[in-house]
Image (cartoon, rainbow, N blue to C red):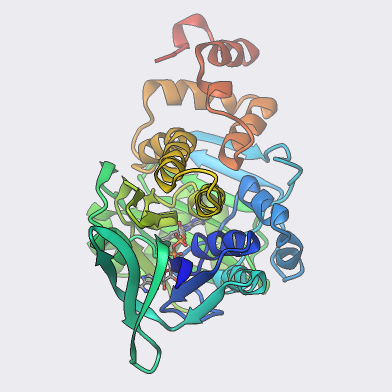
Length: 410
Ligand SMILES: Cc1cc2nc3c(=O)[nH]c(=O)nc-3n(C[C@H](O)[C@H](O)[C@H](O)COP(=O)(O)OP(=O)(O)OC[C@H]3O[C@@H](n4cnc5c(N)ncnc54)[C@H](O)[C@@H]3O)c2cc1C
């Protein structure tokens, strides 16, 4: 009998397990994958995600890999373009985009070192219920042997297609259908910072350095144009960079060497799922998913894993009831993410900006100071109201000399 079973051992599961094991709880982690292994992701981590790794004592391990530090970002949305970088967030002045085979191995090893039992290659097929409560999981060991494990609580950190969410019929809310299909591939020969650009063609392209001297390049193509795009993926990939930013297109053609195949992934819908019930909880993509365009998935998984682990510790050590602990986790998860969620679902359609966003972004691009602030919003160091409150917008328009007739507030 365990205190906690965590299904899924990547960015949500391993940190949650690690933090609970460090508090002395008996934790079992099950993942059908084996580690180190990659998963579908372009793996950019924002400053506030890296601050979590630092606090957990894992950032130096990541820095000791050959992951390239990132200190400059170029962001464009149609005719709006800006370059700069966020102010340090919680002391973190550099970002990284480590390959998931690198990052997830650090996380799994940290969970093990903390005392969690990690079983790789174990696929969970179902949950065990007793009198309406989840009391365990059943599944299969690598050799095919069926096993059942029991715990006070089962955490689904098992991604978008979560078995735990399905078995508990966790209700989805604020659902916004996905709009894009992601194609990405690793390239050598390029020396790019963070490139993040939406073109007039309604397609996003970007790229940033990762490990092993490689740059991950990606294109997000609207679902409606997916069939046309996939007829000639290498040709359309190159053509997207050429059209959105000819200079990057030329660098890709003349200096870039693709190392490996393209990965294609239709984005899952944007959603929140009710993240808890009797004997179970959800964390990471299993409970909250949004378009990967702004790259919040890993950072959110870290932050929400920490919030959940702290509340579970309080409940497991008898400080409060499990229901009140999980209700607070739910509230904090949603309150701290909803503004980014709305922002993400608006921007990731790659259509014309709303009049307000167009006016605000248009003003921001004229000011290095406000550009730093906007990048700080993505990085997690600036609150939405510091840019989008009426007073902040007034200041922005004053600072950048926007005439009264062009000022949009709502
Ligand atoms: C194309 C693409 C690009 C992205 N780019 C970025 C980016 O640049 N930055 C960023 O922050 N986010 C990015 N994301 C999002 C990010 O990858 C996810 O938000 C993040 O991986 C979520 O972590 P997780 O631990 O919740 O789930 P996952 O990483 O999906 O891990 C779930 C784990 O659960 C295991 N599992 C699932 N079912 C079972 C089962 N039944 N039994 C046992 N184990 C199971 C899986 O094997 C897996 O190891 C991207 C996503 C996509 C699709």
